[in-house]
Image 1 (spheres, helix red, strand yellow):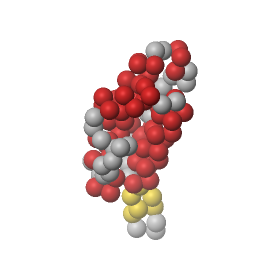
Image 2 (cartoon, rainbow, N blue to C red):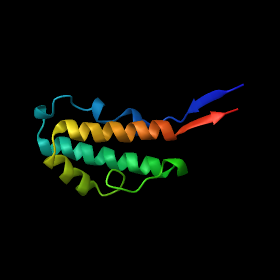
Image 3 (cartoon, one colour):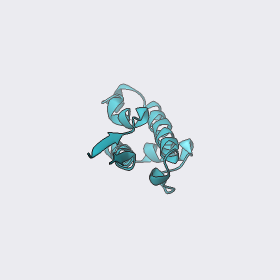
Length: 98
């Protein structure tokens, strides 16, 4: 019998899509601060699974670098990065049990 079990991850389900949908409702610095904290949390979550580990511009624990990048790009670009990290975590954490 094949069963697929997905490890639960708060950060995976709590990405930027769940934050304020209107970045103008808060300052850009506040919104990008959240982006940076979530990006680092996603990185740390990935480090907990060997098959999820990555080390590149998208995957690192430097919150200030994530924040600074976010302040220089369009909100859509930051949301796309968050979606890419969430998708990677959802895929790599999937465990197949036979």
